Length: 316
Image (tube, rainbow, N blue to C red; front, side, top):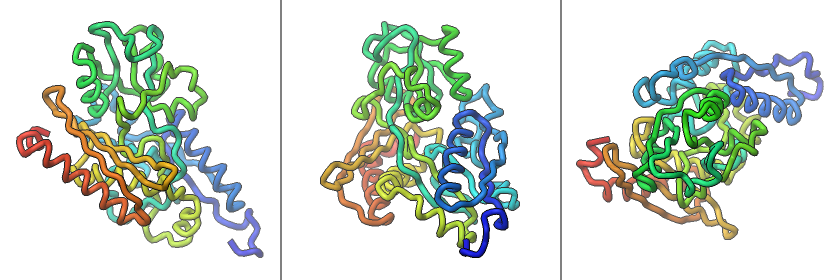
């Protein structure tokens, strides 16, 4: 924005967002950041997506996490919105032609959270306890940890999932810690599950800002919001999923974290669709670019494929 232009004379930026409480928190957070940083008026365009509407079937059976994104991309394409705010773990690994991730913000807690009204810790769950999750990633790791547990589907927004727990439908549920913390619900977390026990989804805890690829001014503005350590870590994670053909129908986990020597360690786990088997891989490096980070992800995917073998991969 030029010095001669006043904020009121500049067309507002419009954020397309889902209307769940968590999605709106995320959109308002980005709205505040943009208004503070750039002095621009920023408005919200609330939308209900197919992913929000279909609650009686698992995402893997109805089109995957892209169902949370499609309507927002249509709003971008039609010019009704300038950017969309997503939980990065919900963003497909390959965006449709004409769209780019312009920024990834600093990550919140990436871990999964154990939430229960009856038990203080995952280790305290009794034999045959009912645990709610519709994530194949979580299901495969839970099955490997505790084959005795009864894993039941759990769909709906965050408040709906917590209500179902409080009604006694489950002994415990597994949720992303970041969402609970962002909504001021950290007290519902009985404990955050360490990443050695349950590896997160690619991008979990991070927010991604999607725009039209030809919006040069917005690309330049938003790029300054990117948290580079989070960008490189999540690019490595997403590269694992992309190379594996990852989607909601694949029980795949990928997580990268930095140590204080600026070394990035990337871990991944792949579950079997029919049993409690897992294969795992790990690599460390010092990526300085997106290409470096993505090469780490590709290397991990190659390791997973080699360990799993053709029959396992075909079963997926």
